[in-house]
Image (tube, rainbow, N blue to C red; front, side, top):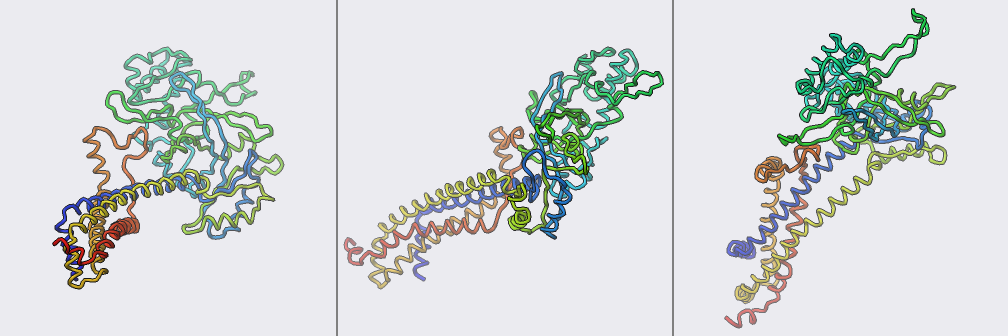
Length: 543
């Protein structure tokens, strides 16, 4: 009992030990906060990656793809059994997106993904990443009347019907339709008309319709662009001459395309208010063009116009800045991925969703056994393998960060070591008296080991409590820091999140606290050994 009482008395009376306790507390607190934030980031990243990608990807390298995907999916289902909860074929090819903005032509590299709208949502979180409310409930490539968020400029059919009135302005510049079109455009972008940038009743066919407003950016088309596409000629018209029927964008749309939001937008700050806004080159209701290559040998370029029907925002820049979804049959038709004899359509990949708890590695091994590489030129990968470099880099970063942060506690351990050596020197007479009264060397040693243990427990406990509170209120603390510094912790023009994600694992708190206590005890071993080896005669010689 005397050992514990002396250790506690030394801790209470030696204020120099407070510095060691604070060091341990700060080390434990820092480790808990950093690990919780990193765990939150990793979880959020994995959640989004797995939501964008399927559990398993069954793909064929090259342009020709997988022939007869229905047979392959039946074989996959037979091989994996009840572990499969969803499958969908896709066509994934590189392409170029072309659009007009403010009278200028823009070209953006994209990845065109042809999907089956009925089954693609079953293998991931595709629908929840769409901006339109109706598409999140039931996806369609049709342009919607409403349901687009307020962050977008006016979009959908109402916007499309408005700008399509420009055709009437081109055909009859003095007509009532021209004036109505200008009035409608004024309802969408009043600043443009009020400043005289669109002046009725005449419009040049090459003149951009509209201008760029920083607070409400819009896409721009020209009258020539809006009336250039025609349907097939009717050779049996009443006049006997070929009849040319123009495509009417006010009543019809082209094949729908869903663009990654960062393909045609960027975040910038308003020059006056400083507010972070999305700046769009186009919006749902506009028409864009897509170029890609056929599956023939050699590949040939092909071209098609699409109507933007929605935006896709997974908040993973790698995907939001590159991807474009279109109907799978449209891509197959454009690329010629149809067998002329059987009529079967080829695909480039089959995406597989497994039930919760199913082993990705075991499912992958079973598919590789069923489709051996010496017979089938297929590549079967898990989503973790596809994103292997990114996940490995994050894991290495977390590991190195933990090692570096543990050095903070190690520094506290050296402080404890120095403090204990000082205490041993100062308490030499006390040690001599204890040993003269019959205290064994092990008892003296245990006093200082207990001292280190109590110091470590107090520091680790305080650090665990403070770290837990810090993580619980980290977003409120971030707001206070923003208020003090006048700068945002996470710039919304760079990051796609406004709150810091955190996950606190009880096991992590336990091992961090245990590690801190172990370091404190280890630091007290050498001073305890020195105290235990003191002889009573030498300790009392100068007293």
